[in-house]
Length: 252
Image 1 (cartoon, helix red, strand yellow):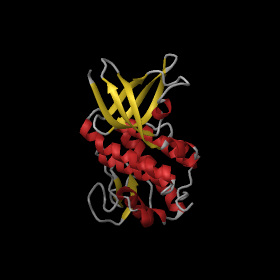
Image 2 (cartoon, one colour):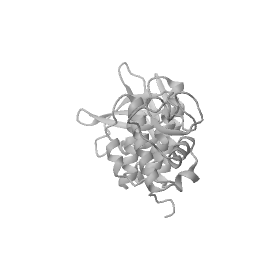
Image 3 (cartoon, helix red, strand yellow):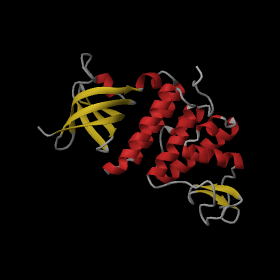
């Protein structure tokens, strides 16, 4: 039979008929895959809970003409439980899944680093390693960088000068100097630029020590950068505004 097997993260699901679902997964080796999971909405389903958003699973597919069909599922990481029980984690995780769904297209090789970014972000959320909003902001910047929209925070994104950097322009690609700064653009301080750079490179010591006011302003800049370069809105992103930027349960 025409079968293939791959690891994947469930991004979203849709009802199909009375008992089936269409599952969208971001897989390690096959990019984004849409497949029918038959009977998963029945109470007696063997693997319905393994195919919910946030779940990380090893899945076998039967190749179909329009849609593939899920034939086997083995859980690798049950991220859904700890993420769904916490509002801040759930909200941040929902934005991550929606962003991944919009960023990733059909190219398999290009999707692989995006897959690992999503797995890493969900693992951090589930374990409470860092603040949920910080995990979200770092994921968004890194996912956009992998997709070809890497921002610049250490020199002017337009002219390349070392500064002083006085503005932030999503259209130009990040930090801009006084000469290149568009009118009406945001004016982050030195600490905010340092935090943006840390989020992009994953310097968590710097991120976890950030001032809450700086972190909240930086979250707004990340959201603006993401919305501009995706060229479409993330419906779940406004919900993330309620997340405290430096809260977390890493010490609990």
